[in-house]
Amino acid sequence: MVSVFDWTARFGFPQDSIWSMQAKLSVLEKAQTASRATPEVPSRRRRLSKEARFEEILVAAEQVFCEAGFEAATVAEIARRAGVVEGNVYRYVKSKRELLAHVISEWYSRKNDELEKEFAQIASVQSRLRYLIAAHLRNMRDSPALLRLILREGRANDAEFREIVGKLNQRYTGYLRSTIEAGVQNGEFRPQTPVRLVRDMIFGGIEHHSTRFLMGEGHLDVESIADQLLQLVLLGVRAEVLASPKRKAIRPSK
Image (cartoon, rainbow, N blue to C red):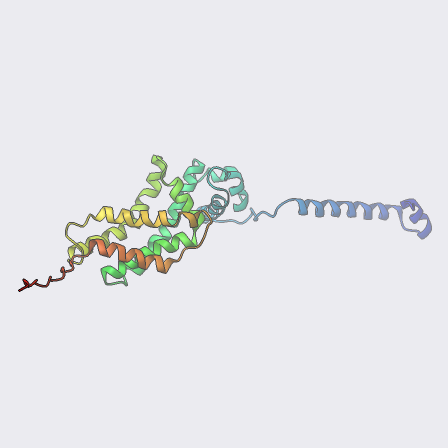
């Protein structure tokens, strides 16, 4: 095997330059190996406002929670994806559960804004009812992992969680409640319609029917289910009562 000293003697290369070249190659190889072994992490040197940084943390948190579930998710992985050190996450929240509450509240805020925008353009009670049923089904279809988290973790008996998410959830379900109440007030629905029960039946029915889909089985036909559920609700609450058919008089036989 030809040594460095043989190459120096044979071709007249300065010994110092050969050692320098080998040292540079060694450093380059180590750097390439390290870059392959270490996952790419977003730059931590970007200067962001406190609000913008928290938004990035929430985006990363939603990804990790949806992929791993609440229990298996770690704040360390969330911080890595957001490009911050783990300690910085705790500048915004006190716990992992509080972080989840903020993720869910962000989702509710977005959906409430969408509902408010569309709701104002729909005039009739029946059309509003159909829209709200379909909108909730679409949320199930489009964000199954997040909806699993909301259904599972949102029901935990946690005062801190309820304080952050509770009012937004009430606003989200309130559109349906106000629609049913409007139907009662304008005479389309029966006066004795149990508004809260009908609201709970709609949301509960959708969640129960969507369980298999949320667990990764089958598909969710939003439009078909929305039509069927709307008809079931209307059959139960509509004010008009079908008149019973008149019976023909039976003539006595002679």
